[in-house]
Image (tube, rainbow, N blue to C red):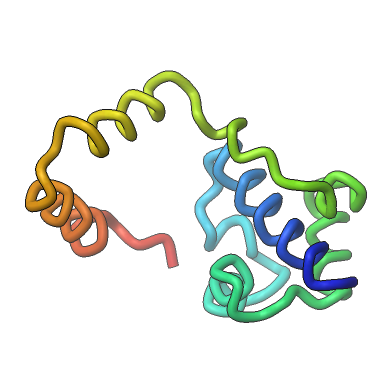
Length: 111
């Protein structure tokens, strides 16, 4: 698999996981560690063919869908678009910084 396919796979796994509201620790159960998957999701490591095969089998995915260009718009339902708009347009840079610190520090971690 080339670099473009590897990037598409990691993005499409992330989109699949978020659309179904699956936390990382549940998504990777019986396949790999959460830390190893996080490295893949963040683009620091490429997914191995064996791990990809396990995800495909566990979630009944199609390899051609995973290697296709990701459709990020599929995550943008109306409430999400409004939240992003508010965060980008109505908040000051200080408010945005405080929001990012809140999201990083106070929300429960899924790993």
